[in-house]
Image (cartoon, rainbow, N blue to C red; front, side, top):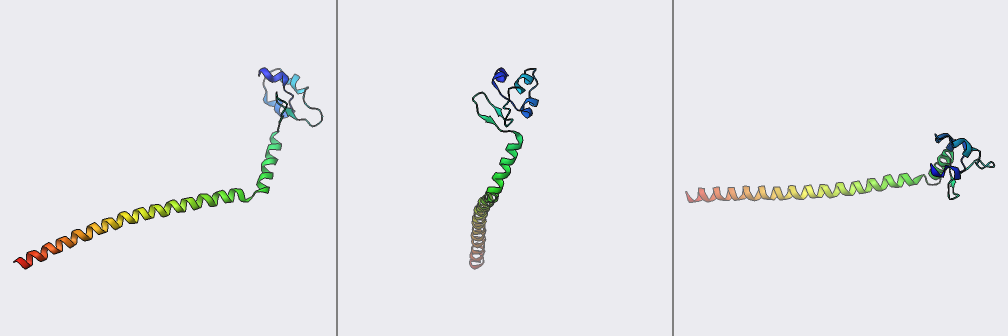
Length: 116
């Protein structure tokens, strides 16, 4: 709030200030295009200008968000594929262990029956 006196504010920005100084700053705004300037002299865009700029960005690059969604989907599919591969590897190891243990049991049973 110290730099309020050095700001030239438009009506929208003035409404956001609660101090008594806002009325004096309102009189210091740019009379030609009703813009706000910060202490360094940079233009502060109004909310309407920001909204239209965002709309223009979306119109210029409508595929931006689509590309992001597609990239996220691809990475999710890759992760899912890797996860499935890991699960299949674990299941194959488990099946191999079960097969070898059942084969060992069968072999032991055969040995017992042959030895009898």
